[in-house]
Image (cartoon, rainbow, N blue to C red; front, side):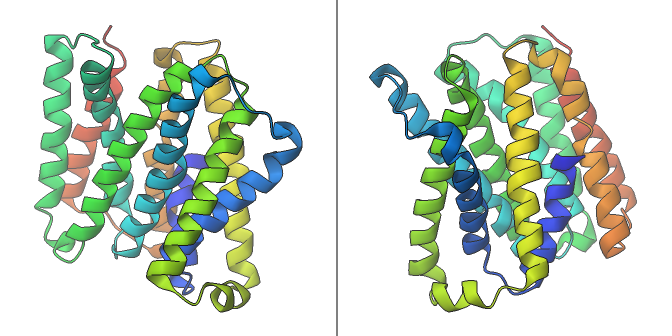
Length: 272
């Protein structure tokens, strides 16, 4: 539910004239601020640093900035939510190339079918003005896939340390990018409404800390296949909230493509 709510709530903040890169930076800044007492500025062993830096940039910078840009350039939220599901097939492909993991014929079939589902959604006439948003959603999914690969090499690290580094890299890098690209950063922060601050805080506390920390914590004790059936429900909650908040009614092409994508991604985790 928390993961699904992130998309419509982010769109509400963007609609309140908060620039997308700045919003992503503030979200990660709050994550860092909250985790500092648990992190205590500990530096991990050198062997973990390359993977930790790669994970922090992939997750803390690329995932969140592409997510906010995807929603900023989209008038319809639901396709972005479904597009984020490409993180799973992208992750399997990244594991094959980076970790030399084998991909069975059945997995290849569902990877192919998930992309077919996205292609069907692309033909929806309502998405004519949303292709740039879907492009950024694909980049978000690709960045999340790389983050999952790097996270496998960080299982022995404390979760608060990993997420504090993610917040540190995300906050600083995105704040610099916002200053260079969006400009007028200080006055923009001062003009953010209290409602937007509440929604940004929700993103940081409930989604980034609550949902993500719990998910990575569960990975220490359970297999991905045991956890993922619950996690794969987040598009359903996200699309339902998009309907309740923005009145988005899915088209036939979107429903068909969405079922193919979500079904393919779900079955990918049922195959060993």
